[in-house]
Length: 523
Image 1 (cartoon, rainbow, N blue to C red):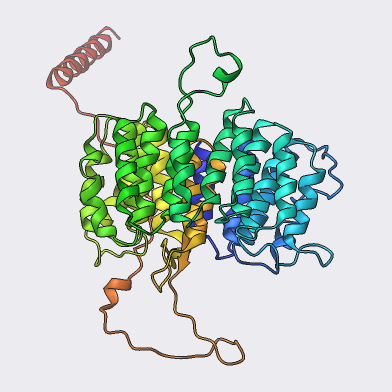
Image 2: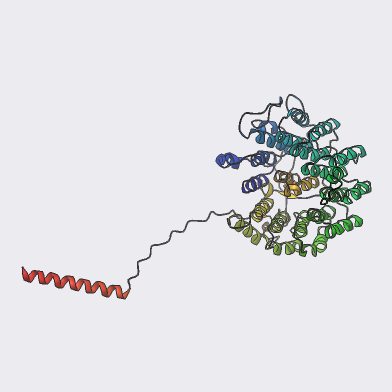
């Protein structure tokens, strides 16, 4: 967990900067990664080099697998290969159909070939995630069919990624045939991972479809019986909430950026009435995707939910505030979250730390009076070995969000024109799934938006130019660099001599002197 936390910190703080010196300078530390930590660490290169389309294949080349699908003999190589494929998708997010890959083919074609040839589910997982993110919204029917074949192998890890990717490829199409295929398979497989991947994939399928999604959302939210009870009807089995979980996200994505009163009401009803903690947490979190254009309303709406007896509802409230109010520095949201950093439940504290980082990104001490104290809290928690692991993990992520992209990006789910930012919304939905699968946290980088001022000449070259700002410089001041604590050398104190000790020693000296005198008389 801590290795992953440092990996995410480095990735987010250097997102899009192409500066991977930390990894190169700490190869010994990187060598401690094993299995999925190695997958996550390799994928971090994709976050750091996000948007570097020309050099993406070159940078990740040493880690990418061969297209013949053969397994490497090196221990753990499959995890590096899978992570590199995922990272390649992050570099080329949404443009895989036009960015260059190998031999004149596109990145999307390269990932499809790897996916078809892959023999291990780790490489399948990385290739499927990479293909879904690179081809996001491209509606490539051939890529969809390749992912469907991977899904039908019914391997839990590979199938989960295929479920997410199928929805990403067909983002916003609302295709009934695809919906029926995905929904049918959720009732045929026994793997919870695959069901969850398909449930979120269905939500992506209905992104922005509004009323058209009402039918499927209602069907998913009404899902009560586990699929196992279909094959063994005589057994009384617990309810399977995963499809209801998908139904919540379907409703949120269908009305993303549109504060539809009916959708908000249904999410609030689910948040307080569902029997599953996971579904209730998701319902509260999803309020953010409806209300992010009106962030000032969100603290008022989730105030009571943040005080719920149920810790999962409280956790959902933290993420709702973080996502909806990201980059605003909204003091009303901070005032709700600060007490929650002292919650008795570790994952509620984790959510509060993550949310505070999102809200305070691109804020300075002058614009947000809470920033300095929250930075100090992060530093204290990250370095405290006795702190709860989940809270420390959340503090690490929150710290990295504040300093994301070299402190030159913000987190925003809408464009400057006020329309929904599809890539950012999708990225945040995928980030929320880190609850079940840590590597998906890298998708938060899709929501990072540069805040620098860039000027170009008619030849697309950067000119030298000046501009006037009437804001005081302190509003844009960088925070002071962290100082390594100096080792304090304590001066050695003189040993105290007790009065009784002095008297005893004086008697001993007097006795020794008298004995010496007696010896002299005898001589």
